[in-house]
Length: 96
Image (tube, rainbow, N blue to C red; front, top):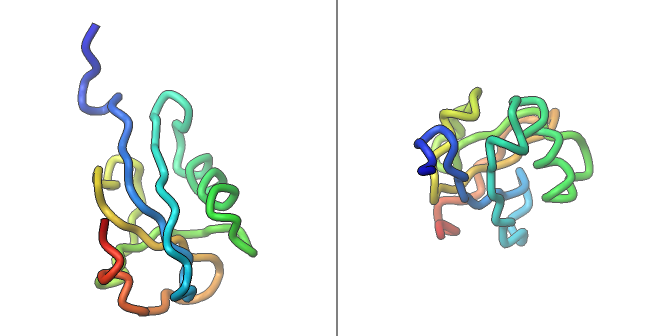
């Protein structure tokens, strides 16, 4: 049985907000394992070993907020942001 687009796993790289020396962490989003946005944020917090809970995911170039699992793009980069503001550090130079 073939998988439809909504069931395919997405792979992308996550960076910690404000940490220029962090090389990023590859993350695979499998919708069978992670079904909600809150579960995704919790998994990201654990995966990148953030010092505080991740509250939002942003694009690295403009800091645009991603609000839904369906908005995440395969083979892209994102920044995991806690309670603070998004910090522009030139994450776009780290693209995979």
